[in-house]
Image (cartoon, rainbow, N blue to C red; front, top):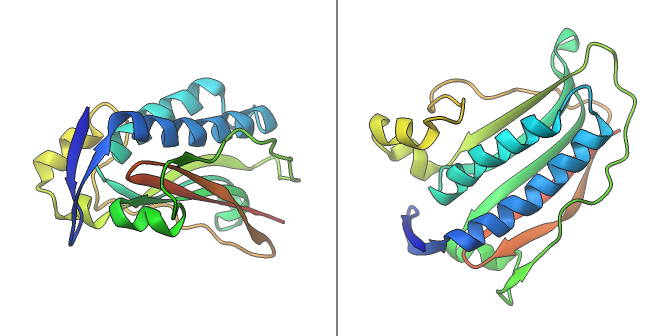
Length: 184
């Protein structure tokens, strides 16, 4: 089944199977993060996040999703993070010029030293499309996900002393995710 979405200047169809493929790859990464940091991210929590971001991606509601191991006692210092820029429509060609389907999630994630006060947080940057929707439509998109509608501040991490690594792209049809990892 296709969902017709509007971006700022283009209309495009996103197939549910494409959303599920890209979301599944991100979920496989989250499961790897859960195996690496089981005290901070349970498999159940990772699956709940999957349910949320499938809805967000199917509705063109997010442009960035992040999953961070951070320390709130040190001004939100980030120790380890997975971040995904979500692309829709014609923007997908920047990571998949040949189209089709590609990228495989679930690679092994090596642990880094973290303090005992470290916590896990998931966060999003809402898409321009989501921000222009009436509040009632925004509420419907986040309904049952545990997330708030736009307007509530997103996580503000402190990135100090680490490096960003490109970890691949996941894409299918008119949706893609550019994956990056932050660590020392």
